[in-house]
Length: 355
Ligand SMILES: Cc1cc2nc3c(=O)[nH]c(=O)nc-3n(C[C@H](O)[C@H](O)[C@H](O)COP(=O)(O)OP(=O)(O)OC[C@H]3O[C@@H](n4cnc5c(N)ncnc54)[C@H](O)[C@@H]3O)c2cc1C
Image 1 (cartoon, rainbow, N blue to C red):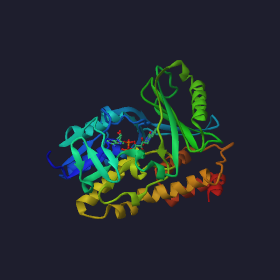
Image 2: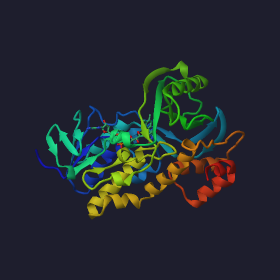
Image 3: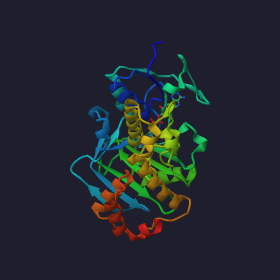
Image 4: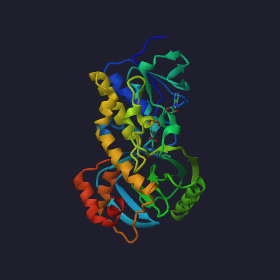
């Protein structure tokens, strides 16, 4: 076996991005992915335009460009924001990840689970040096130590009629710590999902069925029904290690208010590649990152709602397009004072509940 500089365990966005960045910096890397195909974990596949600053999306991985966002509360539209350029994309994760490794000198072993126990990593090619291992196994890593894990459920429906195939919709409910989403996957295909910290799968199934019916998607064909846990607890830099290193959702790289994990996972892999190249401390780099600051603040807000039972009073609220835009940016981690001040001014009851 030819020695590699790094062995990456897990071929999701974090693992493949780590392979991509390190390979570009001249390191020899090898990926071990348990499944036969990359990117098959249940996921909405939604990514903001900002992902292009990290790794540009290849056009063929884009299933749909999204130009607008609608927010619903108790099934009533309370705000909408539309633009003339794509703000968000729904991607085919497999095409996206496969194309990242295609042109680079990266060995990808599929159907190759690595047995992990107490920092011992056994691959089909033998025992891996833990100092060279990058753990990118997603939420399953140290699962029992995570304190805010949401459950999710999503349907993919084909042959449906979409009222606007370039809009995404976010639906909030009084009793739900979480939200439902509707992402277009093209002109006639849609993904309807729900994620929650406080509700059972039974509740989520029922809620999804209502949403599907309300939108007349029940006339379509169910292509997929799937779900997986998702870590809403924020980035945990101390889990980052300096061999084995840990990236992606394995280290909690998910925005707590939205569950967006693809772009944050790629950010951790980019930070790791930079740290390795410069010989700097990865854990310190994570602690100083904007991603850590943003997930920390978002976690605090989520804790208020989830642990302290603060309800989000949105009854009778109508949001201006600019407010919807800033809520979107806040969800992505843009937590600057200007954004927070605008939201505090426009939604004082929400802000007072959270401080
Ligand atoms: C229903 C749902 C919808 C979501 N929607 C979105 C969304 O729209 N946008 C967004 O940004 N995020 C979304 N997320 C979150 C996002 O999917 C994750 O945060 C993101 O995929 C994390 O990337 P990762 O590479 O760290 O982990 P993963 O994507 O989980 O990849 C880990 C990989 O490691 C492999 N693996 C695990 N153990 C081993 C092992 N021992 N040996 C070898 N391989 C192993 C797995 O097979 C998997 O391929 C969603 C999550 C869920 C559950």
